[in-house]
Length: 477
Ligand code: 5AD
Ligand code: SF4
Image (tube, rainbow, N blue to C red; front, side):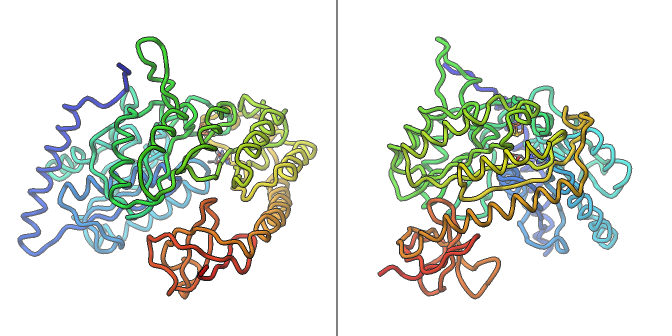
């Protein structure tokens, strides 16, 4: 028997009882003609989006109707991010704007949750500088939302939920998914790596895996409902299962999990993120190469092309190990789409270090790069490093990196012209509502005429034009 660190069932059912009590209150109000609305606003990564779908699910179980505008909401929940300063500034500014809403609608409840307020100093900032925020809860207490809302409605006291002693997996919570054809499925939570720049281990606790049975059941149910693109989430998916060995010390690892999930019948893609190069195994790549459903796409953050910087980042691999993984991947899956994350301007990054980053980008030729200017995070080791890079140097390096990557991305997209690609239609393009957009197996964006496909359907498109960030397609036959 594997032991998974889950929230005890009695605590989950306690929350279900609270949800029912809030629902009673909301149903009474609805009968009097006042439907209660909840608005959930999300900042940050896919993990936060997945958390927000659980938060939205709990709101529904409390009798709230989900809405897309804060103005009509009776309950607003802001799910925040802490990965860079910019993300925190954006969240604080929006929370600031909600002050007027609250003044015009004093019964409205405003809650703030997520990574930003899992940090003590931000929790205190909300307490003292945003007095109209009714409750705050961190990433370890998401499942407690119904109890918090019930308390707030009955006692009218501000609530600042303390973090749990141990961060656990909460199963059996309702979920209101944003899409009916793309889905997130968390396979594990937390991170043990403590990369020196990163706040995540401080705000999401230690690694804990969900049971493979729960994951297989969730993915099976999604495929049964017609979901076509399922992304498995974890801060470091390659650590999956390591915290839950069986009685003989054997683990059911991420490659085993993928192999098991791939057996689920249906027309769908499985994706996963994020992989850490220190644990990306050849076993994983072998499973991908012989799988039916795993998209031939791999996101493998390298962060820097300088071994000296990688050591200072506490990444536990060097560029030769990284390039070895890429070589093996391309040998086994020649047409794999490769993407990465890069941090520019890490403390002490010299011109030579930065050139080494440009060098690895030239060598690997990624299809896409998510690049970030280093942002010091309070409490992390890198924030204490003295040799900070001036802003203008960081920005100039960032521009050079973009210029190089844009030319590579275009070069990688051009040979796709004339090819027929299977594309999952997402409906109207966000950039141009006149056309539809969709994504390929490699997660590349394709634009096409609206009469070719319906939202949520796969369609075969002949690529007729390629740009740096998008492809353009026509009906293939
Ligand atoms: N500054 C800039 N980028 C960061 N990332 C994580 N922490 C920081 C930081 N302090 C980037 C990393 C990570 C991605 C999700 O965000 O590249 O892979
Ligand atoms: Fe942050 Fe490193 Fe963990 Fe990723 S692996 S979440 S970058 S500490």
